[in-house]
Amino acid sequence: MKNQRKHIRFPSENGTIAVITVASKKDVVGLVITEAQGGCSICVLRTSDVVSGDRCKITVGKVGPFLAEVAWVKHLDDEVSTIGIKFLE
Image (cartoon, rainbow, N blue to C red; front, top):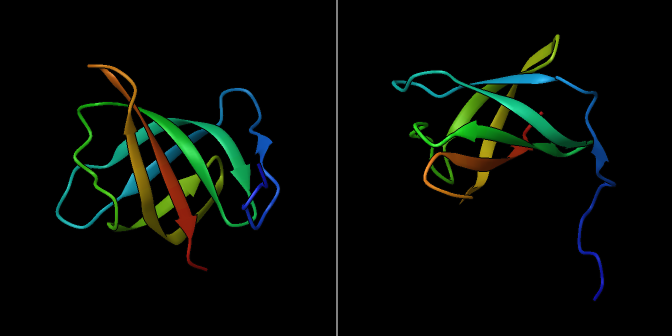
């Protein structure tokens, strides 16, 4: 199967935290799983109400905030989800 990613993904540094801010919703704080030039994936508690397509600002570690978009949300179980973020700038 061919890898269709535009950018190489790499694991984040241990303990890198991201903060996602979506207008009129509570900030979402999560642990960064992987990073790439074009985005990142984040592990969050499922209490988050972000959905695919939401425009947001994201701070990854000490970098940002950047304009971004929620590309996908995957529910792993009743308590944990992963969120894919696409950087827009």
